[in-house]
Length: 424
Ligand SMILES: [Zn+2]
Image 1 (cartoon, rainbow, N blue to C red):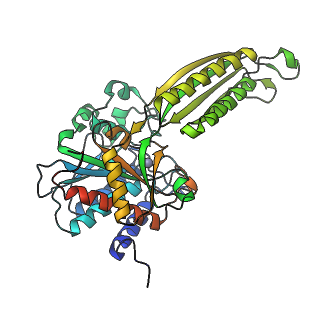
Image 2: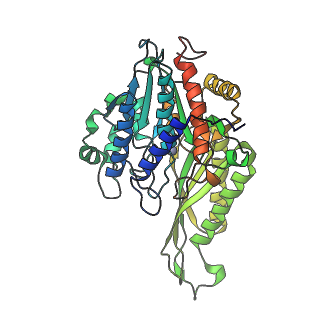
Image 3: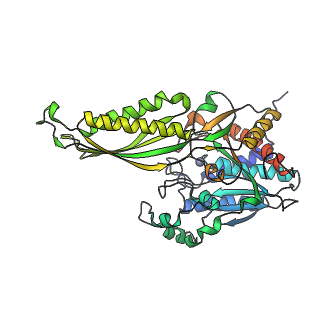
């Protein structure tokens, strides 16, 4: 007997077609470029908006550029069940980060609608400005929906072309001064579920189609300035140097060692950015700036590792006869997702014979904002080699079908119920 298909041929064809159409937008020959608030991003949004309207959703764009689609239920007074993700990419990104959740959510709603109009209303949110690549901070759209706007601060930030957010908004036909109007009344909303590629290798390594995210890790980020003394590389003896790069190199390794010693607790530490001055072959480096990103699922452990790293940096600087100054760039708190939804998702997977595992999410999701306002959960699907934010980013159709199947079942059981355990 032939193996049962995960989704109907109609759904499979629809998903294939949507990804193929999206792939036509912003294709550069080196990945995809649909950076937030650019014409490519807007074109992708139009494609999604058209598909949402075809599915029967009433769609509007809020002041932040989020697409909000709503399907009125038979009992519209009940809090709505919400799903969604983002559609923007990093420069030279892939075709799956975010879009799996947007296209997947719409497919799930189409499948639920085929069984008749659901009891509860449903909403599909397509978040604007998810990636930090445009303005240096992430989740502009979801933070606006939550009422976590920093209008004063945001109005002064510029992109790489020197354009401010209000200017960019104006070009997109949006009014930055109306940003506060994006905040939703969360008493009218029951839950939020985001389907997303894992952006890590765990599911692929375990040959498991679904990851139920229990916690979203969050980074503490430091900016470090090391000051030594620039000098001639030929005439300065080895014991008479203040080599800022040699000191910084030891500091980078100490970040790695500290993170490694807490690896079992889920801590990861990275130095991914460094600038060396004067950066010349025959000059001993006089100044180095680098950034540290340490993250984990437990805020107190992450803070503890950061304290250890700070102490290491100070003692290395002393030994290396350099000065070091350390500034905190940002402190984000990990988010624990809703236990009722986590359990519900597990039950749904079991009932549908979909293997799953619980996991910590290492990447940033809009859900980490939403989860501060209402019950929320994230479902991960595998992506090839764990790669994302790169042209090699890839999720197989088979993986996406499994994700859509699990998402549909999870949303459907909530939309049928007048009351949901632990939820509004
Ligand atoms: Zn994403």
